[in-house]
Length: 305
RNA sequence: AGGAGUGUAGUUCAAGGGCAGAAUAGCGGUCUCCAAAACCGUUGAUGGGGGUUCGAAUCCCUCCACUCCUG
Image (cartoon, rainbow, N blue to C red):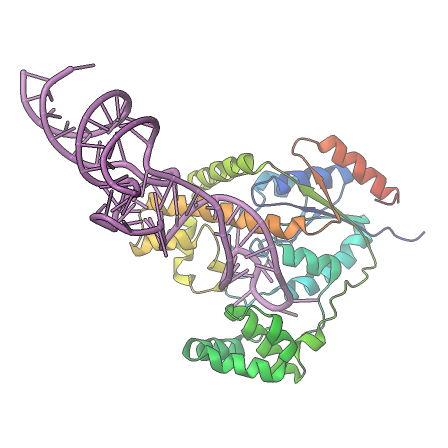
């Protein structure tokens, strides 16, 4: 008989209880969790990125958690390739897999794929960053020459976007916009997306509370150990940067914690902007697990959802 | 309940008779290989009441709130 290949995606803003729900679903279905999170892939960042705790890790097996070094130039493209490879094995073993994550771009890459663009080139990027710092107009001119269409619509105040576009143009010899299809790839597995929808105020309360718990769990010591590596992209992360300011003496510990709370709230807001655009997501209020389970059971029976 | 001072946006502070402004928070949005990143946009205020004046956040009276001092 043909093997089933189902991916259940649990998404939602930070602090919404994705990890708990993912573990509950995976346990109920006798399967495993595949993380879809741009920061939980790193080792040494367990507390600040709210990786699953020991009990959760013991309850169900997790993949793509703490499996990369903070010094790696890890990108969304790496994630897509690695996750798809893994899924082949996991579908073979379990049929259904639960993906849990808060990184919208990563979830999109996993579910819908990215176009075949040249990979990020760290050396070239550093060179372009230096050029931008010295003369943004020069790079904007280059972009207007090599990709007029993208030049018109890109946010020209955003160095990351401009630099990425030029990077692709240079590496491929083709305009960036010409390489983008703006279509979803067809995956050879079924996808069900579930989102956790908290009232904003309640979510913010939970976020504040969770930051306090991270503090009690030893976030400061974890950040202290990572401080020497603060220049890595992995450490450009809410929960660490703010404490680095404290270590530098430019902020008090209390200020740093307040900033972690604020930046977590802002992050949650940006996540929601991303997820609310995705009309494939089935939203559930917290505490409605039974409704989620029945939706999932329908999905697994092959009902169109 | 004696004296003095201060009340401007959620907060910190401008404007001292002539269009109430900034920072920050908040809110909304963008997103195809750094995305927990990097950006873009935006709501919102003169404590209440009266008076002077062509015109009051600004001057006067009063009430209220807060702060300090004295007892």
